[in-house]
Image (tube, rainbow, N blue to C red; front, side, top):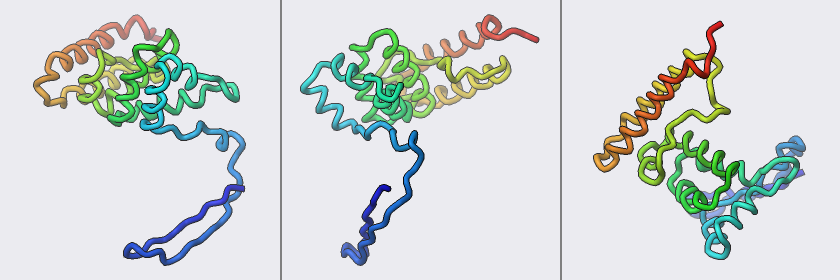
Length: 182
């Protein structure tokens, strides 16, 4: 059982304090990665190398890299603080962590395209794990991503925006090599 205390505030004064127990959730749900914040990771990066922090984040627990998956999920949101963490970690990534970090940035491009284009080189692709099952859906997803990037209005990002759109268009052009007609 997990126990929570809730304090209700009324005009700055505590009006009630309630403690209740919630039934245990499934075993799998309870084993989520501990909450890490950008501030905690930044502090770790002051004391340790980016490679050491990545090694910590990618430690396998319960047959998963829960901390790394959590960090990638946060980076995908496009939140600037998490994108800064990605920027600090990216030089120390190896093959697998570079790929998964790149995939998170590719997804962040759909949520915060200007931020990603400003901070990183081109991450304008659809990650393999997000590839639609059909060529038609793939092309529709490419067009959706192009429309998102086209809305970036910052003139400073004009070249990065054009390169990103070109990458998406190249992927659309190459779609036949990835999808077979049945």
